[in-house]
Image (cartoon, rainbow, N blue to C red; front, side):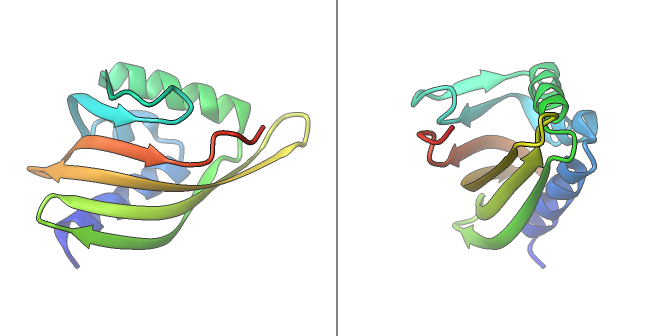
Length: 122
C-alpha cells in the first residue's frame, strides 16, 4: 500500500472517530484548502481552525461519518479520494453528500485539501 493511501486511511479513521485534534495534526501549519461551502478561492487554516471547524460540524451532526468509495493515486504527491459524508442532525434530518477531495501529501503531512461537491443542495 502506498504511503499516501496509508495516510488517508488514517485520516478517515480519525474523522469517523471525531478525533479532530489528531486529524488536524496530520496537516502542515497553514495548509491550503478549497471548499465550495466557503467559495472558490484557496484559503489557509491553522490546526486550531481545523479543530474548531470540524468540532462545529460534529456538533451539528453527532453521528457524522465518511464512507470512502475509492482512492486514486496521482503523480508522486497527490491522492484523490471519492467519499460520501453522512450525518443526522438533532432534528432527525439526514445529510448525505458525495465529495471528491484531492489531497497533496508531502513528508507524510497534508499540505493541500481541495474538496469538490455540489453546494447547491440544502
